[in-house]
Length: 132
Image (cartoon, rainbow, N blue to C red; front, side):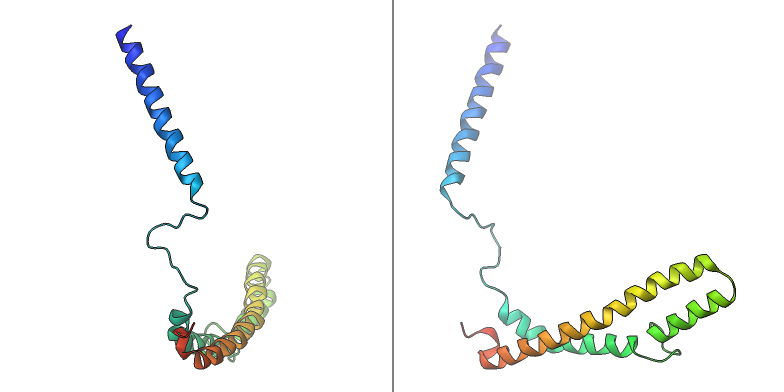
């Protein structure tokens, strides 16, 4: 019996502590974990924008390259054509899926490039994000 009584008392104590902790956290309308960013990261984005722009430009150049350029759409189109002429339908199907995805990257990256240009203009007007 003493063991059962100790167990029950322990469970009641834990339940009481958890209930009090739940009530204490309910009072805080929006808890923020320690180390969480407090701003929108504008200054960090302004600092990285030129690097991001160069990276997007490099990727677009590669995608729009000719058939001798590794990673280009033209090279993948050539590989699809080669697989088709060789009668390798499974390879052709796989490469066509990759080609569809790679083609979809171009408009996405162009849109990001345009958005990034707007961000860079904003950064110039707002002291690289330090101006609130």
